[in-house]
Image: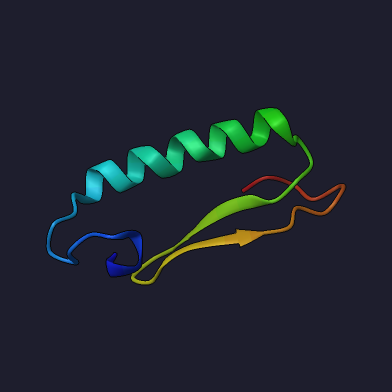
Length: 57
C-alpha cells in the first residue's frame, strides 16, 4: 500500500475488492480472451493469461 502512496493501515478491504471487481469487468469487456485477475487467498491478486479453450472457474 505504501507504493500506492498510502499508509498500510489506512485501507479498506471492501474498497479494494470493489476496485478489483470493476477492473475485472473492464478487462473482460476490452479484452475478452485476455488476462484475468485471480484471487490468491492470504496473499493478494495475480494477473494470469487466459488460454484459448480454457474453461472459466
